[in-house]
Structure formats: structure tokens, C-alpha cells
Figure 1: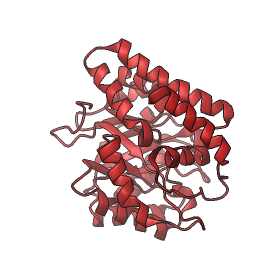
Figure 2: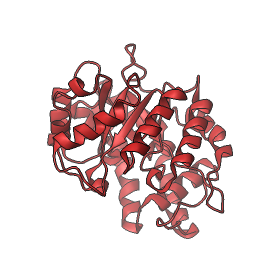
Figure 3: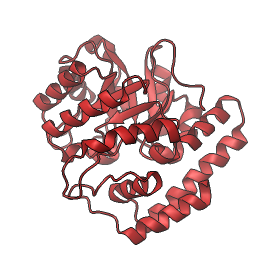
Figure 4: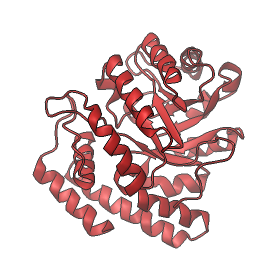
Length: 308
């Protein structure tokens, strides 16, 4: 088990699983799975933090009402069992983002994260900071995290530029979920990071590099089903056993490299989690297509050959 979590000062460290959204076979939100899902994460994977309604959770394919229902259920089921429940509140609409931020505060979430709008894109760090400020103002006492994922948003403003003097605008600012591969930008975020902040790395196959650069923890989809092994990687890193840490990272890369060659997307990832965990998560929501059973079986076999 990692020694990174939890920090005595409330700073977020260690692993957070970016949760999948369970659907019924008909594509409706299936809240009944969330209780067993929390059991699986805590008991089988050693996960003590979750990131809800993010990219993995298909947030941009959900209605605001659905996101509220999911956030409520995750908070209720994780209460007393998870150290951190961070709710992603980012939307294309400022008003919807503010609505979700207020709701997260009302239901007792431990923090909120916000992604950049990606239809009408902010062109500068200043415009993006202003958007984030307006969302944070709707829940001023809740720890606030900027969620950087340029591969999906198409917003290539460096995170380091976004966080410049950001506490003057957002006193509740507590860090960055950095889901990009630019280690220069990551390193500059870590270097600039204030004592209360957390820089959480979001590229699972490169986690060890992120830790070496000074990331305080990580948020990722694969931690749903390989969290216990990644906890071992973090522990090895912390104790200076880089050979063991690299060995585990290389195993993760072997699995994901194999999956990518076959065609790895959210639909495949969700089906792999279902196969490994035994939870019924249902199909992804269109336009993401479901994974074929044969495809998922091949990746599950690779998983078991590497980790079991």
C-alpha cells in the first residue's frame, strides 16, 4: 500500500480512480452498481480516492441531472470509506458548471475539478482563468482543481500559465489534474506549486515519470482494475526501489501497448473493467461504441497473463 495517502493537512496524494459510469443495458444510469463498485475499489484495489464524472465517467455525454444523481450516489456510498471524492463539474456552459459546483458542495464532496470548455475554446490563460474563477465562485469553500487534458479539449494553453497567481482569483484553488504528456509543463507546475496544492498526474502509462517530476499523486482510469499494483509502484518509488517501480510501470505499459494496438478507447476500457471486476457497467453512451466481447476477452487474457 502506498504511504502517500492521506496527507495530514488534507492535501490530496496517492491514487484516485477515475470512475466509469454504470449504465443499464438500455443505456440509462444504473445507480445500483455504485455500492458494489465502491466495495471493489476499496477491498480489491486498495483505492481510497475517486474522481467522479470525468472523462472516464463520460461526463460530456451525460445530462446535468444525471451527473447530479451520480455525484450524490458516489458521495453517499463512499462516505467513511474513501479519503477523497472529487466531482468533475466542468461543462461547455458556465451556468451548468456553476450549478454542478454548487451541487457538489451541497452533497459533501471533498473537492471539484473543472475542465476547459472545448467548443468555444478559451484562447488565452487569462480567459480560461476567468472561466474557472466564475465556476469556483459558486462553491467558494470547496477545494478547486483545474483539469488539464489538451488531447481532448484542444486547448493547448500551458497549465503553468493558467495557474499563475490563480489563488488571487480562486482562494480555494488546490491544484491541477494534469492529463497531458508534456513533462516540461508538468515540471513547471510542480515547481510553481504552493504548499497546499496537489499536482495529480493523469497519464497512467507514464506515472513513474510524473512521480519523478514531483507529482503528488495520480488520477486514472486503469487504477480501477490495476490500482493495487500501482500502489506497489508508488511504494517502491517512495522507498527508492526504482528497479521494482520500473518493473511495474513496464507491465502497465505492456498491457496498454497491447490494448492500443487492438484499438483502445473508452468503450474497450469500460468493458475491460467489467471483465476484471465482475461488475456490470453496461455499454458506453453514443457516439462511443461498445467493445466486442472477443476484443475484450483478448485484452482481459493479456491482463491476467501480466498481473495474475
